[in-house]
Image (cartoon, rainbow, N blue to C red; front, side, top):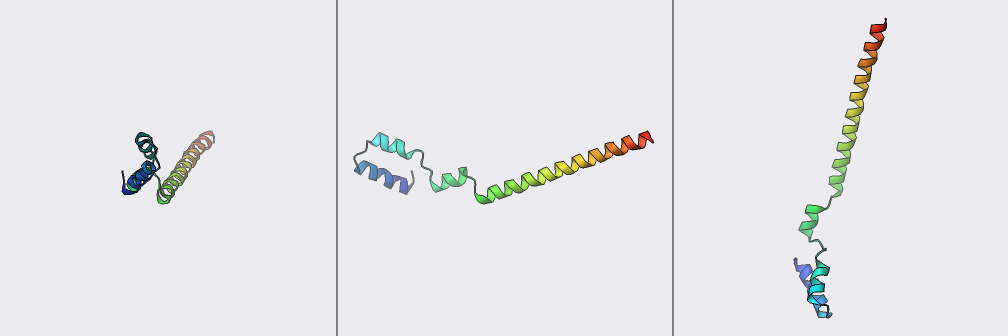
Amino acid sequence: MSTKTIKLYDVLIDLKVDRKVAAEALDPILTRDEAFQVLATKEDLHRQTKWIISTFIAVALGQIAVLTGIMTFILSSTG
């Protein structure tokens, strides 16, 4: 537990909350270090969005190139 979580635990105990209930209530609270490891930042989301957009563009350009090649082959073989 972090210092703030321990202080919150002490406050709950002072309010006559059962120790087991107080400990269970604090389990879901993330510490700052845990939050940095688990939660995504705006920078992470921005980087992920840029990656998705660039991948989409690359796939679209690849499809255009393949379709252009197929159409060129079809048109050149009919003439």
